[in-house]
Amino acid sequence: MENASRKILVPSGLKMLMHRELGYSRPTINRALDGADDTRVAREIRSYALEHGGAEVVPVRWEQVDGKTWVRKQ
Image (cartoon, rainbow, N blue to C red):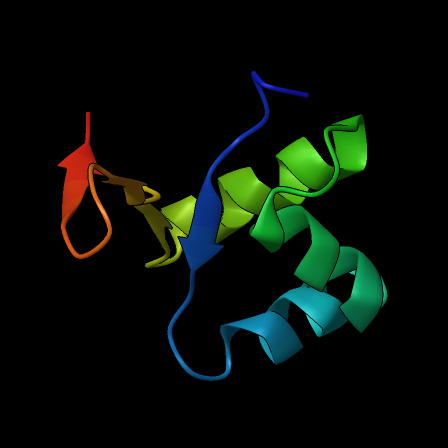
């Protein structure tokens, strides 16, 4: 699932609103927003979140170049 989506952060209360409006369980919503699932339902949840104030988070990767130094990997 390398092509899976990135994690989406949502404003306070949006997960509960999505639970009520979309009718999906909280664990389903959490997995979709964490990018763990790539199903039609997960894409619907992510789309709804982005339309209502959510934002994708770009993961930061670090690489150790020697025993003490870490650099951000592009």
